[in-house]
Image (cartoon, rainbow, N blue to C red):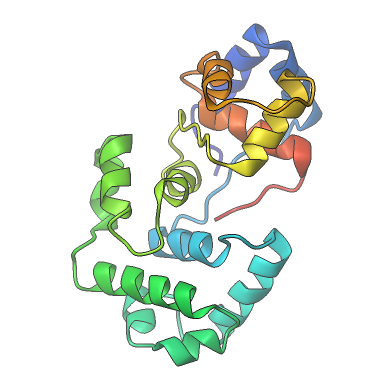
Length: 205
């Protein structure tokens, strides 16, 4: 379901930034989407770390097929060997088991994340093995649909901003932050359209 703020965000971004205006017009009808399940969103993000979208989807499909359900309880009862049989590395298998176990035993409680501010959500998520700030930011964009997340470490975002705002020249982190500041409080939306400029097919976690 489209976030309630999406229309206002696109109108404001279009009015203040000609590049955004062009991208929003080009990808009219497409919006951010979420599958809604916190555990599956995080698990997908872990599976997709450092591999292509196509490869991640293939591994995810094998992962889903190998289990009766993709829930914390079911995955926590699995083991590294079973997960590696789905095409996951030993490291990612450990990350998924840690995530599933923490949610299953109550150390992580996804139901209350919607009430926390962005930095508090990040602080909880980075306790999980294999989840750093980038993965937490992806979760906030794609699951919590927070409107003003700016994942500066994301390579796709860096590439798109370089192409559209810096004439293809390498960006410093300070310059990237300065460019992004003009899109607040809708930096998640701006980031999503910049991703579309590289790959028109929306990715959902």
